[in-house]
Amino acid sequence: MNRIAFLCIVLGATLWGTISWYVKHLYEFGFTAMEIVTIRVVTSTIILLIFLFIVSPKELKLQSWLDIKYFIGTGIISIIFFNYSLFKAIDLATIPIATALLYTAPAFVTIMSVFLFQEKFSKYKVISLIMTFIGICFIVGLVPFDMANISFISIIFGLGSGIGYALYSIFSKFALKRYSSLTITIYTFLVASIVLIPFFPLEKLALFSETTVLMYGFGLGFLPTALAYIIYTFGLQYMETSNASILTTIEPIVATLIGVFIFREAFSFLQMIGMTCILGAVILIHRSPQKEETIPTPQNQLH
Image 1 (cartoon, helix red, strand yellow):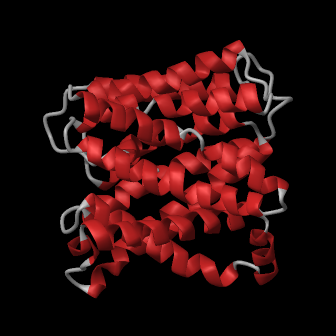
Image 2: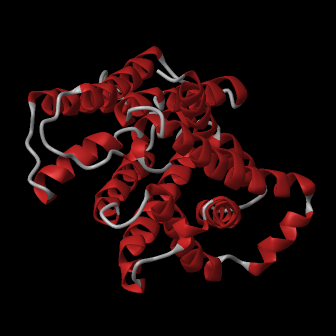
């Protein structure tokens, strides 16, 4: 395994794991979940556009403007819905719980691909789905029956983030036949930005005159988004996607450490078992032998 590629993948996943740190602080300044989504998407769009203009302007060229339909799916139905659900889950529950439920995405991809692309249900996929279900039960308190500390709506948003994350892979399957991963990413963010900007309240712009707010806002769009994706994509060129995807499981570990040690959020031993089950299911899906071409899982694409 290429050492530089290994470090790039791990660093990119580690940066993804810090998302909640920025989100929590932006909540403290009165931003709503959708406003934080807008800050992240718009900032990262500007950074990625500048990066691609300098490094690879050909990635910005569309074969046909009709192809924008692909990015309506990835940008609006997936990226906006996924980020909003994740940020709401972080607000209503805890960072470890929100992150664990986000990582149900590969299970949702597996289920969707059976119905949409007629992919086969292998024994590895069945075991992975069972492990994911068991993990969810431990995370939300169904085993043992102790859901008093977790609201039902936070569970819905947490699972919604997993579904939204999974939908990116579903929509990008079609776009990948015509475009590179970088092109899909930039147009995904661009479409999402165009949709979100008109709804951002003008009075909230005044908050960015504060250095702290500007730091958290720019930091969210730069470090755990644009920079993380650029580093991850570079490492992916020199490593098998299955190995890279497994390494990205460091993300929920980083997020959990931030939630527990920085924000003093509770995370029980049983919830830890649940997260282990979900991460084990992710690893099993990527390690299972596949004879036919399958759709890319979320960790191979975008966070």
